[in-house]
Image (cartoon, rainbow, N blue to C red):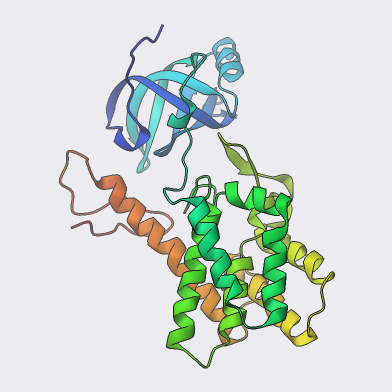
Length: 322
């Protein structure tokens, strides 16, 4: 029986024996190794991050662990933290159900920014939109309580950037701030269209994930359509209930459809005018800077005084830390 009162957060795990860890199970998948033996692959998480884990055992043991380690459950584990193919993982030796009454805030990764303050700033940026058409469509979303309930809780991604409760709102506001700065730098660009497009560019993410306060995964529509198409569908449903000039509507729809920049990055169309490109650029800057910052933050506090981060498959390189 695991009884250690204190256990490290994922961000603090070092290679070697982990006497006790208390983590949230995000994913659990029974797989078969190359030697045809079954094993259980888990994704464990807490408020500081996530880490893969594996458990090898006989069919009876695997059945017992699978029943305990269901997605959304909290487990107490013992194992070895190791590097496998340049990825840190936990080779599990023991898995038990978490004790009742666990302090759940340990496992909830949340935005460090006040969502109330973000909402106020977001609304102020929208209210400054001079175009009645564009301002009204944005305010329609703000007034939609069902949408805003999801928008306030949703992550901006499952793992890559702002992957926590309120992450979508934080990321969206950052993109809106960036395009507001672009408006001052590039006065020839349509600032109203950029602000509206920045606010709306990721609205499909409220439908892309099934998320609770403890975990989130891709929804079935998210897997089948992706957030860009889901967001376009939400936008069209709102646009059909308001009057908007056909050209304004077409350009706003295009900003949402093109915000990922390239088709092989998930865009349905690539940016065809300046404002669509600038919204894409602001989106890319905020998500990428998060990855740089997160790699540096992950290295802080570790005993080794490394000059370079671990390899990031999202960036395709290590980053310089000093």
